Amino acid sequence: MTNAKVRTIDKTAQTMEEKLNTLRAGVLGSNDGILTVVGVLVSVAAATSNEFTIFIAGLSDLLACAFSMAAGEYASVSAQKETEKAAVAKEAKLLKTAWAEQVAAVKAHYVAKGVHEQTAAAIAADLMQKKPLATVVRIKYDIELGHYLNPWDAAYASLFAAALGGLLPLMAMTFVTGPLKWGATILAVALASALTGLISAKLGDGLVKRAVIRNIIIGLITITIHYGVGKLF
Image (cartoon, rainbow, N blue to C red; front, side):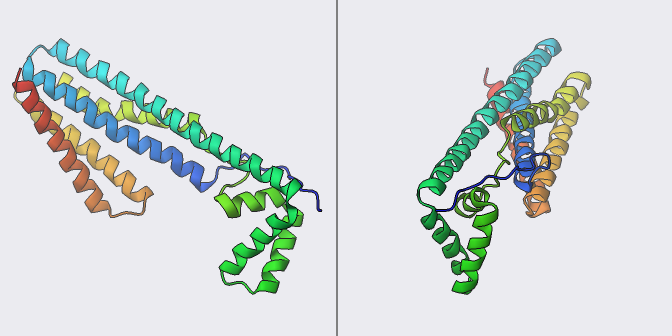
């Protein structure tokens, strides 16, 4: 049985998955910040004209939303990281107790991709000689050894994005006075929602126009619903 060796892994350069996870957390945080903050602002503004009350309600919700999103991202990504580490530990143990089966699994992976059996066997032997653990976890779980998702990166991205997402509607509702207040708030929501839709579409290789329009419509619906709720009281 060949001894499994784990080579030193370069942890300085982030993988694409790590970068996208951080950006994903930021986009979700921004979208949530926009919708929750504007929901509270509109509900309170529809019920009272006291500007200080409106500001405090919006600011409180912005802070609560930002920290809530950050905590949620931290917990979610931490769970995923722990699952990945458990999978790596399991495979490291199997490399010591079931080497032949691990090599066979690598070979089968390449055969399934259409590689000739003899060539697949040669590839498996070479990879397992050089980087056995990195090879099996990549093939079985699509995990890059040493590159686990960072819960702190996701939490910080979500925290700041949620705060920034809700800041524009808050400023519009707070600092614009008179008959322009509602128009400025709606415009702020539309702009913030459009930007979030644009970024999310770019990250996911989606349709930019559809994502932007969808986000704007959702933002306007949110305003309408919360305005109606505020008018009930």
